[in-house]
Image 1 (cartoon, helix red, strand yellow):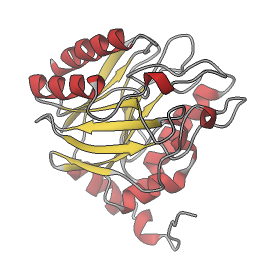
Image 2: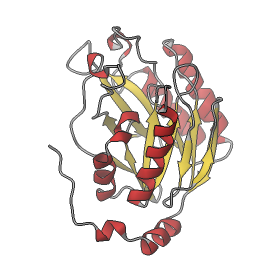
Image 3: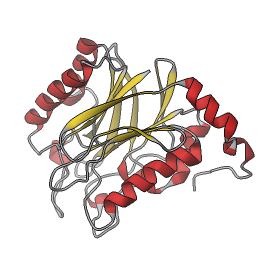
Length: 263
């Protein structure tokens, strides 16, 4: 199965972002992937510190999701992308990942659990955390676990997703630049792949605020496709055979003696 990870920076212009989605999915679709992964907050960028994304938020039947559904059908590919979804708190929506099938149907929605209250930023001022529940969707012959950006720093979530059947961890992100932050990003992506003997597909925002470095990592921690700092996309083939081979050689999931439970 071929998947594509797309790298770009969104803005606060929602119409321009929707047009970017149309263009970027069309470009990636030339490689005929079965899944295109777009970054976190693709619908609209985060507000400045002290600001609000409440007015930018949409429902799951809004314009942004409509564009995703139409693009999926037009190009015959599933799509995962990030948006701000209205919640019961008008000023603090959810940071949501949408998974849309190649038929245009909504097959999953993951509301970010771990909000980025770190490194001098407080995402919980702008957003509401989702319920603690892993979200796994089937696309083609594979199962994909959804997680967002800061979730990478919590290995318990990735393990819960793998326990729920995920063979690939899909990680849209807007990973903020900063001292050692790019090192953290690549280290966590590799660690999540190795410790879970699974694939990781990460699509990140870039530009002045965010790190870029989108990539696909195989179950042995090898980056099999990558984008640097510029806009673009990368494609990679994933296979059940490779997954089984690695898990036979390194049966760490079978050998563990602890389970993960939410608190």
